[in-house]
Length: 234
Ligand code: BT5
Image (cartoon, rainbow, N blue to C red):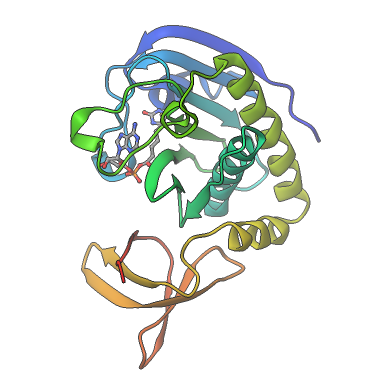
């Protein structure tokens, strides 16, 4: 079923994800919260997400039949396709980042309440400044194209692609996994996966049907379900 989007626009909020979670149970699927600025934008594991004016900070309320961690890929794919519409080549860095020209341009954070709702937060640097401490590692659509973009056009594109990938995901999640594999940076690259209890280094060889990353250490093949992947240079 195609989702109808209903957008709530806010000037400022701590985090669109937190706001969306607070209204999720009584809101229909397809409710979208967009804020001009977030004062406490968040990434995974308590990290912060810089959210000055000019970027797309949005959270989408979804109500899939089952909670599925692979849903995060739907957000990343929507961003990659949006970038392509504006002539930018983006890559998915498993599991939840989008990179352009060696820098991070977007991140996806899914949260939720099992069997009730999923809130998919997407942060995409569009026209915003990149804070000084992130300039080595982050970029924006404006920085890549050398011009400001029509913000609403970017938002509409993200939502259109999101609706399409979400529908495909519900019909057949494996199509989504295949699409991620085609757009990922990591396959055949040397990676280091940082876990809560250590690190594994090796070659990323595949993304499996369950969305996990398969690493070949030279001795064994390890399936990484969730982690922080850093691509080792060289
Ligand atoms: C993410 O976390 O990449 C998920 C980011 C999700 C942000 C959206 S915005 C709308 C919604 N509301 C929220 O509160 N959050 C979501 P993670 O993989 O943990 O990456 C976080 C790291 O990315 C930080 O530690 C920084 O190194 C870097 N970072 C922070 N802000 C950035 C930015 N604007 N652009 C690029 N990199 C950034």
